[in-house]
Length: 219
Image (cartoon, rainbow, N blue to C red):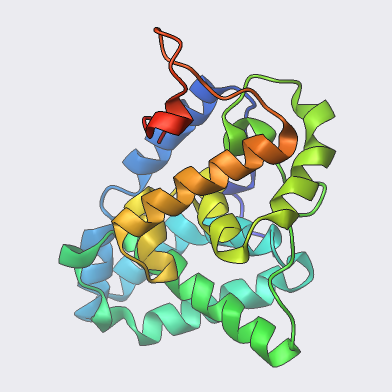
């Protein structure tokens, strides 16, 4: 059965809606580090709480990348997370980032066994508002955006989608893919620039008309 929750809802197309949902998600997951730490000490109820809190988001991660196997991959993620729960160190990152790291590894294992590469985004899952942060007609832009995303280097595309789809922070996304946070920010900046070029979107400018992408002011 597909898990219910905010991770399965269609995200709004406006930046302020994304920001509001992001805040709600952070509030919901605020005690996850404590729950994961308690589960490592044998508290089964704490792990059950984690499953209820994060299953919708993790299911969404798989459904957007490998929809036909999403439920099996989610189940495998929780099995591996339970087995590895004692390796979680809250000093090194969030529980949410750690869980997505487990999911990332589960997907990589699945793709290696199947002899496949990670697929490009499908038509039903791309939200241009979130990915390129531009106020344009989302429905009209979506097909072009899917093509543009497919042209990005896989490591840039995955990092961008972890942040835009899964709403991880750059530091959390960096931990998921195993790179330093500074490298993640650089790749994210580069990926957004590539997308704008591929889509022929205008570069964002500041109040003085400066090109923010060129000057490095764009997150």
